[in-house]
Amino acid sequence: GVIASAHDLVKVYGVGPTAVRALDGVDVDLVRGELTAIMGPSGSGKSTLMHCLAGLDRPTSGTVVVDGQTVSSMSERRLTALRRTRVGFVFQAYNLVPTLTALENITLPLDIARRPVDRAHLDLVVGTLGLTDRLGHKPAELSGGQQQRVACARALVARPAVVFADEPTGNLDSTSAAEVLGFLRGSVDDLGQSVVMVTHDPTSAGYAHRVLFLADGRVVGELRDPTAETVL
Ligand code: ADP
Ligand code: ADP
Image 1 (cartoon, protein in one colour):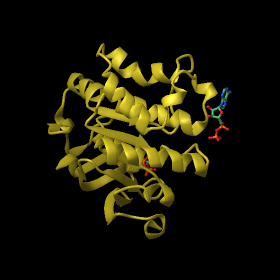
Image 2: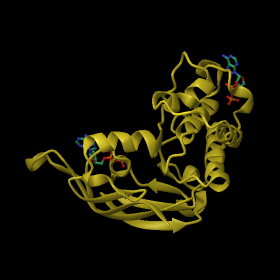
Image 3: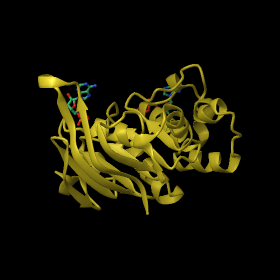
Image 4: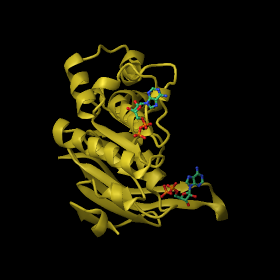
């Protein structure tokens, strides 16, 4: 099935002669239970596409449907609710709360939403991300790769329909990056999570089930079961 889709998506920043057409008619279907990578050169519209799919940014025209809901025409209130409950985010800079332990960071979205922690699901997520013996550590006591895996666990813990990751390994050395991507792929293969990852790194894209290539605000190609070599 399709977990998120965009139809004839256009995003224009600004008006008049200086306006930038960041997305120029994008059609994509993202498959449930897959890790999809979005690749393309700087300025090709990757972040804009992800932000429109995630309900962080409104398209100029076109339709976005996530988990059966039409995001592109939602009120701000419903968008906020969608972002809280149906969508998870992983950022390049981890964005962990430094004063909280790994476990407290992971359960923070549930605490904010005043939802109970499903202990069995938490254990599954934490185990899948290889964090079982790191839960009591504060972010400063964890390696970069471990911090990003905590951020992944935090994105996954509320069972979102889809997790969006924006250059999740951008701050990591290649060893830690491989770890994070391996665990992220594991969350897809073992937990059935749907993940969309923006990256400009062919090695990262090699972990995906499918890669979409953007150029000048359009989808210009795709590849199934890519490897770092075939993506190049
Ligand atoms: P990518 O993520 O592939 O680097 P972006 O989606 O960030 O590409 O940007 C696509 C185009 O839109 C670029 O030309 C960029 O300069 C422009 N752009 C992105 N965000 C804004 C903004 N907030 N205001 C004006 N132009 C923007
Ligand atoms: P990596 O091998 O990914 O670069 P590090 O060398 O940063 O990881 O850390 C190795 C181990 O030491 C990790 O398991 C981490 O939990 C622990 N560690 C790193 N920094 C600290 C710290 N400041 N205090 C306590 N433990 C730490």
